Amino acid sequence: MAASEAPAGARSSGAGPAEPNHGLRIFLIWLVVALAADLLIWFVWGPHLPPGDMASASGGQQFDIKVMSVMAAPVMALVLVYGAYAIVVWRHREGDDEDGPAIHGNTRVQATWITVTSVIVLTLAGFGTYELINGQGAGAGEGPTAIWHPTGTKPLQVQVIGQQWRFTYRYPQFGGFETTQLVLPVNKWVQFNVTSIDVIHSFWAYQLGVKADANPGVNNVAFTKPTQSGRFIVRCAELCGLWHGAMNNYGHVVSESAFMTWASQTRAQLANVTRMLPPYATTYDPTVIPTINKAMAKAGIAGANGYYYPPNDPVQP
Amino acid sequence: MSVPARVATLVVAFLAVVAGGSFLVINFLLSGPPVESFTTVSAGQVHVTMQEDPQNTVSNKPDWVSYFIKSPTTGKWVHTTLFRVPAGTTVDMTILGYDGCTPLRNPFWSKVTGTYGNRAYVNGKPVAAINSWSGCNVGHTFSIPGIGLNVPMATPSVTATLCGTSPCTSGPHEVMTFKFKTPSTPGDYFWQCRVPCGGGFIDGFGGPMQTIGYMTGNMEVVS
Image 1 (cartoon, rainbow over the protein chains, first blue to last red):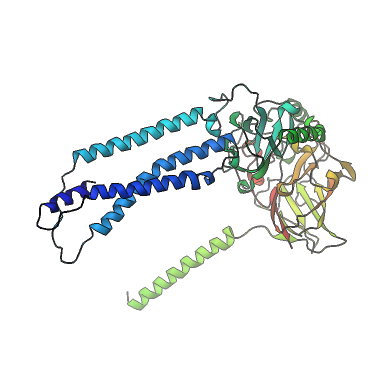
Image 2: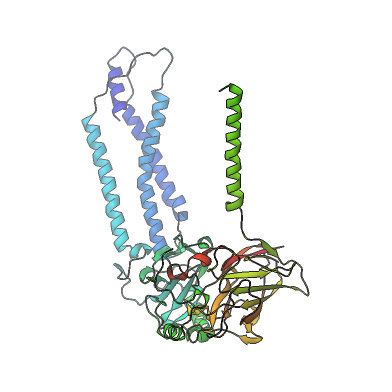
């Protein structure tokens, strides 16, 4: 801005034709470009921004990205418009060997710049903080004690168990069966209890907007409410070993009646395996298996370099 | 030093660096276990035979547990976990379980899945699951997550003296058999053991569990 105003003032005092008001020109061009960009972002590009709006958490994230983009676009437009204007209008012309004017700053421009950028940054910081805390938990893992949780409803509990190199899912409200399939009902709150039985994984249900680290011995809670039926992909987002890149599967959001049918059928089909599972708990620590550990210790078993290796036992590679 | 001598020195030094780099790439980065190819289909199926051993005395990691594959051409045991099978074909798998027991970290994998009838056979006797927490009777698993295959491997008696030299040719062992169909789509399908059998590593999940040629490998499906 300072550069645009200083040359105008300097040259208007000379013998040549009066300089146009470059500041006003740039402002008007910027206004049109910024408005067009924001309208395109909000109405055309916005609905397609990641991660989509298949669930409440992902819809909230898409809204946040749209807001950020709408606020960032005018700033970017100003830089580009100013740069393009400078190249077109103030470029060097044949025979013009005059030095440019000495610029010593402009208090009004500086104050405006500092004020506007401060307002933008602080507004975004406030908006982001609000969305993180109150925006349905933002779909992120909130730790064992969630700072946000849905009120007035009892969410479907799904335990996500990370293990090399597969996620399995346990449904404690349906007898605690465990399965490799992730099936959820539409329009119902889901509480993911994410944990691991070996190394650190990260449960990333992309289209649901849920991403929560899976730490051994920790229950990491995340919420979402699927709002559309369909398929979503689950990936591990934490480098977890040799086949980390193949640790993914698809989940499905179905109608509530279809979910109930699936859950009851799966519960019956897996009944013999469910009986072998430890009692449901929010953390999954099979390093503590009293029965088998006692049996092995009694037998003095060392086959397969066997044993059950507790976290502190004993060796570090 | 004359100019020709300098040039010669430079060329020799350059060639030495290239040779050293090539040796490094070929011997360490591109080397790996061989791939055993089971592409001869007989009566609509291929026969694959493997064994899992409590040690591995044919490598520089003798205390690592390991799978071996029986070569379809020579009939000899090969220290590898890579094999190739045709697409859309039945694999008649036999795995000799020479290793002792270690409980599954997650007993969910006690269940046999992905085989014909979701059954496997222990010495000819059908089983739908083997509970590794109720008794010390599972050593490893053979699991291909990409096709939903999971088979727990039964073990010899807990008091048995296990085979001590690999590949095992005698000693107490269980014979696991099962059949599954390969995908119709060619591609790579990794397989793994789900028992934490990497002795000497954190939680038993390091070493052989993370190394191709030991307790994990790849099934290459070809058209």
